[in-house]
Length: 189
Image (tube, rainbow, N blue to C red; front, side):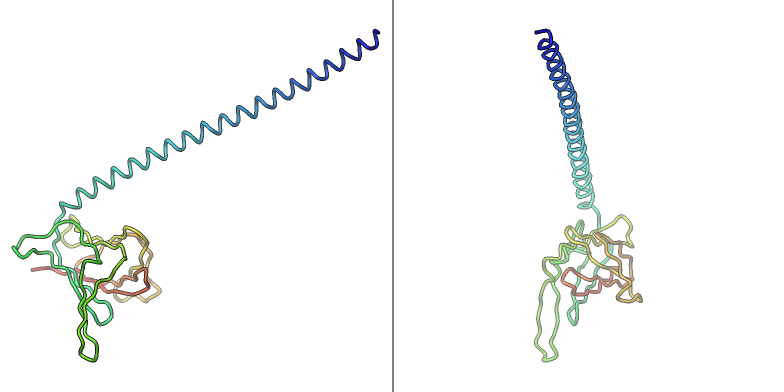
């Protein structure tokens, strides 16, 4: 009977030890899961705050952009077609804000003499006025585009989402469709 009691006490002690080890292990796992969950919530909250700040900055920049005045005209060529944007309204006032590239009509003529007009569509590229009268901003609201200055080789362009174009310098822009346009900003005087 004493032997059975001792064996029972030892087995009970082993079971209690195993239960204690299991509890400690489960408690550690629960604390790690809690820590990971807290960390994930904090990261998510920080990302939300960062996105909100970015959205507010973009909104503020858009409001500023709407008030910026164009000081230069833009001339564009695409193959044998050409087009442009005048910085001056018909009433003589300067235009403000942003001009999407797909709103600039291009005009061309085939070698047969037939004339045609078209727009460069779905490129999500905008021409924006800047504070400096000798600069314009070319930016993409979607995909990146490649740009290079006149005199540089085709393989010397850089891939960007926005680029500053300066007065009287010819730039080549390779669109998402792999078509190349030339763009130059000139005085409108």
